[in-house]
Length: 586
Image 1 (cartoon, rainbow, N blue to C red):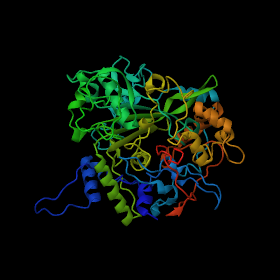
Image 2: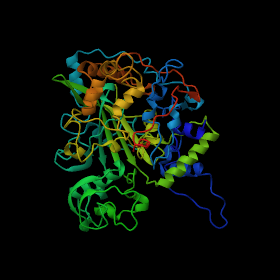
Image 3: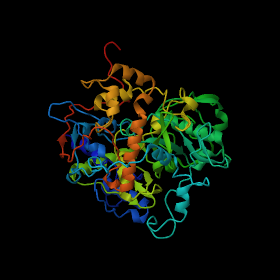
Image 4: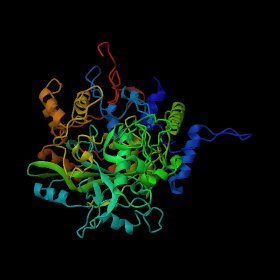
């Protein structure tokens, strides 16, 4: 077995070291530099607050390993396999150098991670019993906006209680929520006074599996670029400049051309359409690798940023200072229709703190792979701060807020946030440690060019995303997993999409191709069951044991993994971006 590949994901390839951007070179008579892994780790640690440099005590030392990694992949030797692994663990696309497709076939985990500590899956607290009317009234009450129209959590953080104040200075030093979740007709969030906050909502194809509403939650995502990207060359706030910079970013994250209204390139000094002439552009052209001598880059005040420190338009990379805000919500039922509720289960935030080039990321991934080969039982060192959040090790900080027992949002503790970084810092499926923006709906065909919030328009009528080989992404995932979720518990999807022999229903697949809501949106009955299961977890406040909820068949989950044990999957599934092999007929 190639342990360099196999250990890459499970232990978070590059999570410890990819946050550093400097490659030190020996000169003159200086002593040789330290090993790359040591050097980069030290640089990352030095860039974070002092109190992040002491590893936190975790009840689950492998909290970064998600519960899905313990899902049963083969119930009996020689029986059918359930490969949900490929959604995350796959052949990467540069500048992601986490090569972890082999994890689909062999799970290489540290011995101390063999035990499944996500016990809420197998022994969940009993669902909260409430009449439907009371349950719906609860999920329709906001725990984000107060009765006067203010932001509840922001007000609480202005005077943090001692339990939240990690350094005891009386101030909250992490992210303070400042998004009103009030997008205009272009997705731009606005305060009650009409001022732009910089946040912009976008619609995207939800990631396959546990992230579908039918498996527990409705989610949304906002993006915000730093202030320089929202200002013109003279430093004035400019929505037009911001739109352009977001279009440039979209082109280079999604690796597609993005349409524009007719735009004068001469005023901006940027060849947006890549034709070699500064004229009138009607698109941002995705041109990679960049053409020598082409005047191209972010526009407005952002054109003057330090490219070495802040970045430039590069395929698969965000500029330094990019932020994401993601709310995870209960499910509301009205008029027989299921939609996103007002009440939040969680509010997740991430900010890019360091610009890393392709070579930086490759060096870090290769160094970490070598280190894991030498010490396969070594667990990842978590760098965290109770107020600022947890470092992914790839240049981002993550922070989260979650419901307390009374239904108010509170800061997550370090262990609760550590559960987020395994996927966002060390799997082959991510684009610069993120998932959603690379899955944004296409600007050329989506409503409002894909810049809207799910509260403005839901999932109904959105066509299924297609893989490069022509297959529907969701139908392909269902066929590989043989179920509607990673744990085989979604009886509703099982009945809708699968025949008795485990093959897919052709009629359901055909409907899915035209409308993803037939799969992703649960029935009202199932939505209420999932809400009750979530409320039980909230009342228990034992999120270190897991936060996934299920409703239906008992989950197929292993109590233990076997180090270097075979999953039963004989061949890794290729990712959706890989073009099919050419044949003689093509």
